[in-house]
Image (cartoon, rainbow, N blue to C red; front, side):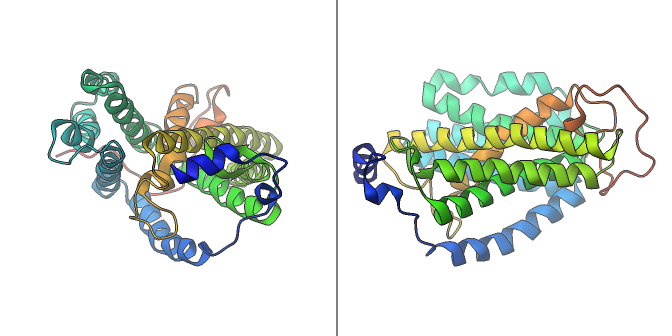
Length: 305
């Protein structure tokens, strides 16, 4: 509540609101990233059950933090639903292969209250979006890699620009730490990394067209990532907490780290429906072409048991 009061009272005319924040948490952030990033990319590359396991564990952790912010004990019905239901929907999807029914399953917790239902939907569609990109599209590894790296670039560039430049707050009543300079820096980083990836990954069009598509779709994912970040910040303010948890040193909780990914992954999954067979979602709308002869990244299929 103290953080919320300071955010409401801050104004663009307040000199303190214009000062860039310090870098005291940078070391912890770098250490955490150095540990988590290789593990995550390894699981994405391996595909199959290592990637599924990573997604499911992440969803349970996200559900635990959501329940904690709502002050729902883990052994209560609402707590159990938030921990298990999104993961159950994903397992059912992989087992039966009915993606539409999984999305409908996520709506069931709305019967326990709007915030329980919103948490189930947000966590569930994020996980299903990642699984869809990895196992149900021709791009597979490339698609998940594109989303993860663009969201990471958005977060990183926003962090650096916000602290180096500072300036007016982006949404002081929602997230007092975010600045407009940080937001613009994050979008620039997402576009830059999107363009580079589009040039490096298999492409059905020329280099110039690939770069432009990378810029455009990087911007879309950057906007989605920042929207997810602001939505999570608003939810934390409603619950009167600063961080969703303390599971990742320097970052806070899982929700603090992966809120942007929860918004960007479903968007990428929807865009992939309009992409040619075997091509990444950033080529949505391009006329169908033959799949590349040697797609990058390890081949993978939906786990079967």
